Image (cartoon, rainbow, N blue to C red):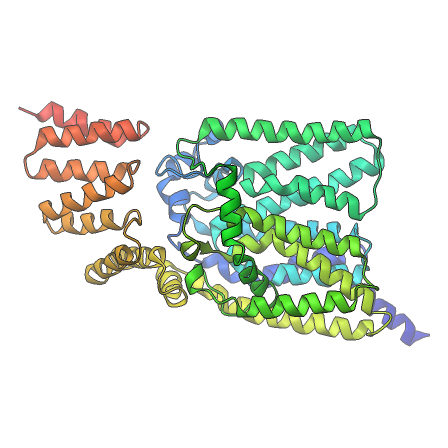
Length: 531
């Protein structure tokens, strides 16, 4: 009797009450605590936190965050993600530019997402112990290190948090016929959209979720819930359209063509989900290997086929749909297929679909073919491997030089990797290596933005004004909204006595970026001293 009681105690300590949440939180803290001391990678984080520090440090700019893209005021982009900016504002209010707090926020958000995943998987009727191990595998998965250890990776975490909240509240809305929970579901969906555009696919996932659970509800109530979600989409679309200055429009046919053209990328993500090795902070398609993804897909398909009679087909379909729809938006790109970036953090939400199917398979075999103890042993070994792999990989995020050296090694034809490695050398005063990296950037992608600007800054620092002006002019041709290029071209003209030309350039810069006060300040200063 005593032995039986001991077994019960040991088996339930991971699943009873709040214990699962405590263990998941502790595991994440132990894995990611080291990231609290990491510096800038200079991959968007310096833009959000350093260059935009004045903006995010002032809570009076909260309203403005909903009226501009996420990179402004220092840069311009086609990304409308005000919730992410608000999270940076919260961190900046606490710590300014101290990165400890930003990394701590990412860790806390990852804990929240992992706990929400636990609650979400429970709704599928999986055993508590399976739900625990699946949630822990998600929490420790090496492919998600980029989303947690890299500060801007919180975009993916916030997307998952609000997507899971939307699905959980939608389910409860259906079961309890609650109007207020329906409103909360729509608000969660709206916040997911404001975190990342990928959330536009969430209604598809929600439909398959309801289908898999065999939930029914009156048509009138269903229409009410659907109308709330459509209002969320309409409001988001209106705000996004009004806020974005630059927004490439591929059209429906263009997007469909891009998805078809880039569909092989899904194999790469499958490979990282099942075999998280050879991880990279940045990979472009032509440098990527699809072998592990291809083998994993064949193996996974064979397992599903062999077990087809024992599996809950509805849940399997839901898992597949969840995985695919959250990856589809990442396939939409105007770049040639070989030049598209493959980023592991984009797997954050999609991985949930894979875990759903793994959970269904585990539930089907644990009683009939395999002992539950053996499956738990497999989960323990997988978690141990994930911790080891994640710890080694995380070290690459500690500073920009290590980060971009690794990126160049993993993706040797990526112009973005060479550009940022050049900037890491430039910042450290190694001008010769920096110039070599910038020239390699242009070699691999003649249209890569900022490379010529950086070469211009090197020339300006060396007082090679003619060369500097040439590079700045070339940068403006391919990057017409980049106000720094106008600013420093004007300074170059001023240094060689072409004051009128400097004023003309600064005025052109103001036409492109009227929000850059530095340009008008230079014009005012020069006009005061101009004879």
